[in-house]
Image 1 (tube, helix red, strand yellow):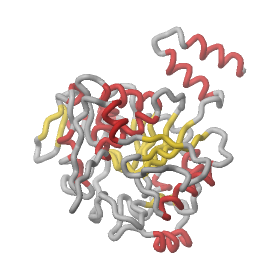
Image 2 (cartoon, helix red, strand yellow):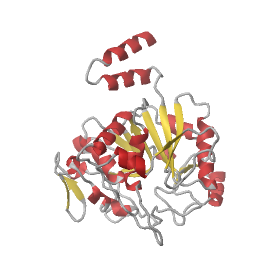
Image 3 (tube, helix red, strand yellow):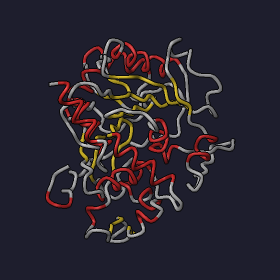
Image 4 (tube, one colour):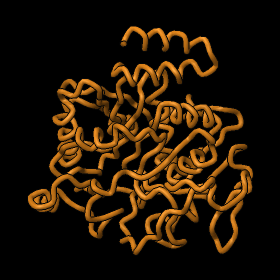
Length: 332
């Protein structure tokens, strides 16, 4: 059986869809791994603690690789402080400008100091990290996301049969001014390039697309935990590296691109794994608070979990609207 599968994979390379076919066959034969990318720009004790839960959970998992995706502009040295054998990929300003020379940098001024915030395009860090890699999926975890109990392998395997190209939190729509990010109104305005030329801003402040016929083309997600298929990550990478490039804020450009792409399916991480807070609570969950939550509320994703300052929003989130239907009648 395995021999026939491998022969089918080899034959697939002869077609235009060869790489995709070969990946599918090898995945079904159990030969293709997924990667978990832990993205960070800090190395405080709580961030290290969260990483170690990932490392412990995946230590004996044969089908998952784990790597730290770090910003060398913020972390001069990495990543022995997390684990002496930690695999790592750096993605800082130099890598950004070299890989995506036509993408306009977004300058973000922090109080009292100059700052350059690239996290609006966090999907490009993940796409860059996957260049030349042969994985089926990439789970992308922000440094201030914790899973109570630390059973990350259980979370990943619970979605192993879900073949969609993009999984995240709150895929769909939220009210116009809902926190965080005002329901996608402002970050949708950052969509740029030929891929998004037909996206307009209107209808009471909500963006909509005239590309294929309606408002449902534009989508949002919450990007603290995202899973990409390799083919979708490749599309993100190619779009941003093009001249002119197509790109935008990760929480709008990513789901909108998927929603515009005929073969790309998107949806939500199972609600069974989402914590008591869909987005965040005010104040952030510190290490001491996380200790208390873990004692009685295991197996849930929490965000933001941090002891150090961050540029992430700390506004409480109100009631959320249900995700819209995707074009063509399918749910997300």
